Image 1 (cartoon, rainbow, N blue to C red):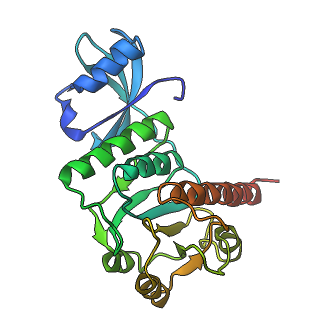
Image 2: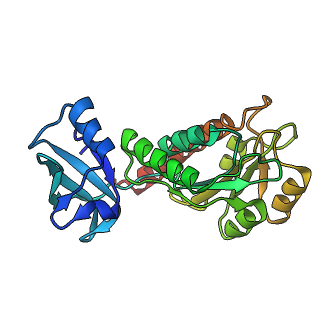
Length: 257
């Protein structure tokens, strides 16, 4: 259904047999895309509605009317959880947008020892809205989950069951992220990864030690010292490329002869 515009809806927007569009959605569909009554699009619900998250809908004079459920596309590749220490200012907005476009499954904001920003509920709501918009733009099948900010020890504990776990560090003689992905990748072409990116100034020595003791692998993104909003983009691009190769190999191995 790539030829149809997509719009993400919250469960509360579905009322009886009608989908209540938000003012922003209404304005975008009508004024920007020039869609009108009878035009169809894909509504992606954040929660299953009547057993499905994807629906073909038709615009009415004021809202949208569901036509039929659609099969949900499957996202290929590794399931990536981005654990990112919050940068200062509004930098995390861009991290969320880029990470969503590059296919992450989850985003965990982290309050590290060098974190300056102390986010409130409004920030979290904003990040989730950005993720929804980025998922629509990138034509993704799912929207990454963004949880409430964690402390670094909490993030380490929450990721304990996932392997591999990579901690990006600068100014250290450690293997590159690409090398780690090639030598110790997820257990399958559709497995999981946890990737952690530090704040401005990087992780403190104590934070690195905590991670190493819990089984995290230290990785490098190259000789350059990247900004806190650039490092996630660089790392996720490497993972996306390596994941696509692994998935392609899996598909080739399973092809009938």
